[in-house]
Image 1 (spheres, rainbow, N blue to C red):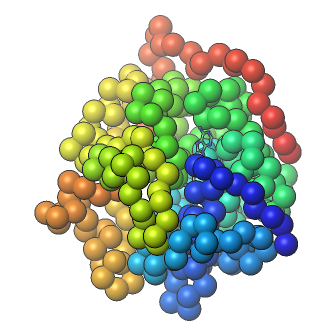
Image 2 (image 1 turned 60 degrees about the horizontal axis):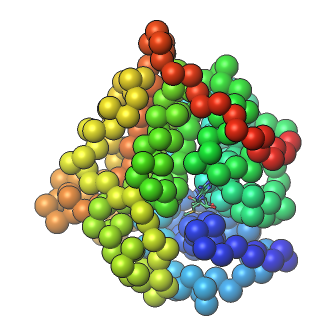
Length: 291
Ligand SMILES: C[S@@+](CC[C@H](N)C(=O)[O-])C[C@H]1O[C@@H](n2cnc3c(N)ncnc32)[C@H](O)[C@@H]1O
């Protein structure tokens, strides 16, 4: 057993893991993930006491979000089999083992505490690298080999940043990775406001404040975060099981959910930086790297 001693926002990595593992343990799961199931069994952490009860519909929704991200990664790997996936705020995500094609390079970026736990409990191999860094500092950008194509993922991360920090991060990626792709999810403005007011989640525990919320009607504005952004597209949730699984891919068309729902967004960055474009932000200090 390994003690998981995360608190505050890093603790949310245990919440998402717990939900994916609960969903993966079902015989009719939408997201098979033996590594997540095993990891929860091996961690010494009072999951229910600290993070509330797992509601099956929430577990499925979290798993469908992960499956949506998996599909974007698989699409990327079909074009760039030995490309680099940079997983920002990766926490205890076991996505690498769900999508590994045998040649992908994988970079996990997270704060020092969650990253040290990740390194202790997951079997990282030579194609995986861990960078302990606050994504707001963007120091990690200078440590990534982008020569074989880059996909940046940010699953369950940007809502914990201030809007300006999140937009700054998108712009930094657009400037640093010509020809690259980025995929991230966001919560709605209304949901963000509820968390800031101290709302409890469906499992009964208090949600950490999610500072940035974005509605579907504002998404087109992301075109302007950086001149290299050439495409802003919706990544619909995949279909799943039962009512939640039916509604998930259709949320954007349903009047009650259309304006107040979580979104997954994909940005594509143009291959050629424009003349006079600002280069990626300079390194301020070297982050801790492993592997
Ligand atoms: C909700 S968890 C998501 C973890 C994982 N991506 C998943 O989907 O299970 C949020 C993650 O973002 C990380 N995080 C939050 N703020 C961060 C920051 N400023 N820099 C780097 N990582 C951050 C947390 O430590 C945590 O691992």
